[in-house]
Image (cartoon, rainbow, N blue to C red; front, top):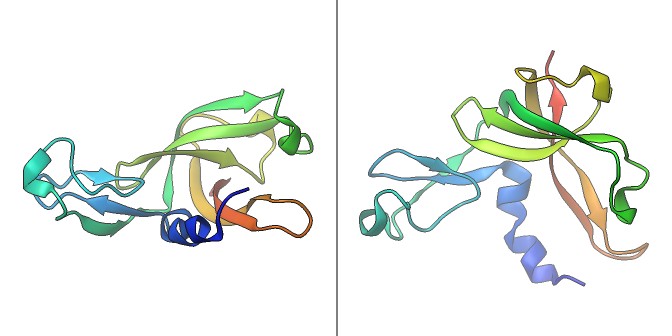
Length: 134
């Protein structure tokens, strides 16, 4: 079972697609980082908060036919790697689309959806998934 404190700490990144941007080289990261791996020490603890663009294009995808037991009712489903309009690559489930319609280059946007829960009376976890824009 996960801690409630951890759930609350992760909310900005999962709910708002909050990342960070290096003030030295301008590289954007998701999830947030405390240091840019390109600039190293120059950026240590100076990273700026950055709201990742919610719109993007499917860069790659996979269709999942044999899922873990918690996702039995979802299968088959698509998992996509999306390149956002600001250049960040994010992977997540693609929903509200027939799996035969998924294609590279498809325009999508991030939405907030239920991800999982800890039993009937437990914590409900929300996070981002992608839906088609077309």
